[in-house]
Amino acid sequence: MNLEDIISQTIRQNSKPIGFDVFMNLALYNPETGYYRSNASAIGRQGDFITAPETSDLFGYSLARQCKQVLNKNTSILEFGAGSGVLAAQLLFELARLNSLPEKYYILELSAQLKQQQYETISKVLPELIDIVEWLSELPKKFSGVVIANEVLDAMPAKRLMFSEGRFVELGVDYIDGRFQWSLFDEPYSGLMKMPTANFTEGYKTEINLQALAWIESLYEAMSDGVVLLIDYGMDRTEYFHPQRSEGTLRCYHKHKASDNPFENVGKQDITTSVNFSDIADQACDAGFEVLGYCNQTMFLLSLGIENYLSEEKDNAKRIQLAQQIKQLVLPSAMGESFKVLALSKKQTVKLDGFREQDLTSKL
Image 1: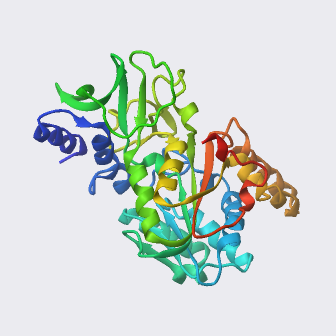
Image 2: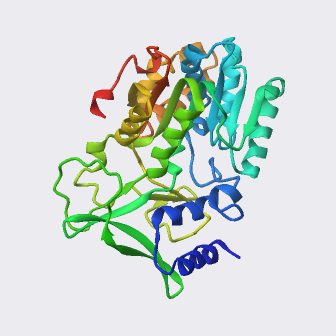
Image 3: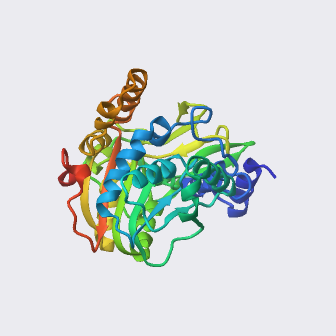
């Protein structure tokens, strides 16, 4: 049975439209045919989208400097959804160079194909370190160290809402005449929503990610102490619900082309929503975390000295190449401004180097 049949059957069994979060979950994570479960070549220049670690090794090397500040010989790293394994390889390489290797490098990954790809990536580059890498299929009990989630929150299934007749109503998904289409629920949405006092126009659309909030809570429970680094594209609440953002933040990616139609290429395209970092920070504080810093990717990487790698490179051709890669990571028109870094801590008070140049926590 193909993915479209599976989702349409779910709608029929439900005998009414399903929430968009249910659709997104099936499209991305169905065990047999979901985008992330069946598509090991999604990430990278040959795939559908490119991430910061795929853009340059310097992303992982800079992040390793931040990890070094927190790690000691009894602590580990836990990376969520490690993609192709490139970031893990970068971090382990640089931490070995800095003489700050973690006790264990855990990767929580549900896709068997991606696990295999991660194993191959790391063992090819660092065969001597593959033994400290361990794959998990669920959160560990009482983890201590650094948690890294790079472009994880944006892929968590989100609900879609529309402002209609003075209130927000959930936008569901129906299957009519052989195709998926949007369908407005009857009742006003009564779930968790913290909104700025804004005059929303009729038809204004937005997203809310309850799964991401629940994940933050379960993460707190799983940690005994340590620091969490969340890196993703998103913004604070005021910007998230800006009047001009009337179509929400839903984006789909297929072969490096963006669209806002999740009903095309089902199971063959990425579906994402931007992160409302204010919601994440509020939930984190409610759970017991402390916010250690929040800034854009540009200032985070500059604070960690990414440009120093340029001055250390003696080969002129390589230096030009590195300069181009750094531009991709830090220029506002590329990844620098749209990506943010939020750091949380549990039972650990440390002034993180990554927020030396900028800390926008007060904006959350």
